[in-house]
Length: 487
Picture (spheres, rainbow, N blue to C red):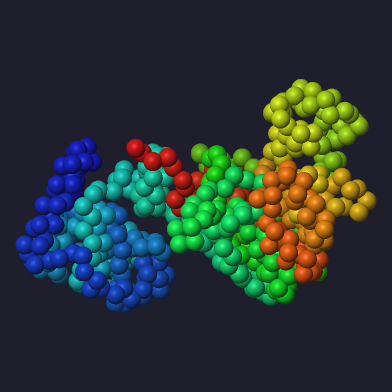
């Protein structure tokens, strides 16, 4: 076997030489000429001494014992050991077998047996080389630790770190169960434009592009909301979409410029309806994918640092009450300048151009939200934060909105949707600050045709996966996170 201390170029040349040697023998190891009869895990699960099997996968271990060899073959389901004997294969086939390297793909035929150490294995009767790996695997399969390589060459991360692959497979299962949940509630799955003439539904910096055929600028969407409300107008009463949003903003442990969003809307519902939806959705998905409602987050050494309890009956607390608890019972009785001074003293980051409601928001984001580890619905937010929601009847300074916070971050906003076209126009015009091009007139025209009262939610799929799968960085739940080009 190769010695990992050899220079990479030398190892690559050795593998290329083996490839040429195989080709000289009439072996061309890049052909689809093997169909596995089952997965490696299924072969182990359905063990029967002497049962014929045909499995395929990547070689992840190789032990040369002279006239016999052991290799481990791994597919997506797991691994199985394969035992090759020279006296069974014959000199020619066994010689070809010696050309195999870690990372090669092989298809193997044989029969199941158990070794003296109790290992379920395949006694090899024949094999096919399906792909020759010309580069050695990282760290001899003991785990890839270089963060830069892990994100830039995610395929190596998936090969080397089985826990990373498990996270990504569970992410897929989470999205599958989300769809099952909404389909079971008779929601219609929809698809709406990712390129929009006017990006709306959120306050964010969009990515800009140009449509050559139409001769005009378009923007990658920053939210799904406004097209979904058009569909409510059109008579689709319960709908959801899982799709990509794009925001031309910073990167952090909780932000990626391209992210996956779920939005769902229900006619004749409100923010209370959607709170029940969020709680039921997350608990159902956790139970089905993870088999538990107790989510453990661990440190690098594997010690549990916190346990999130998703048991239904989540806490509900008003935004103003939480602010008063942290910033003082008299907070909303202070002048704007007094609030700014106290926020600064409390350690909130206040910019010179922060408006009064943004000062309060900075206190919430800095001092309150990070403490909300257990599921909490923060309700009745300031009206300036959510211009697409309805005002609270008994407190017109707030809107019928919730933010579901878990693990110290917002997982899902939801609200009673504004369906009054006059009130909605006034709010959007105020938000636009007189810039008419920012107002989506087609959306307002749609509202004027009549939209039913409705509740809506958004759930950041990436953040949901972070919480459910015990990951503290958004990059660890996205297969290919955005990175600055090497050049």
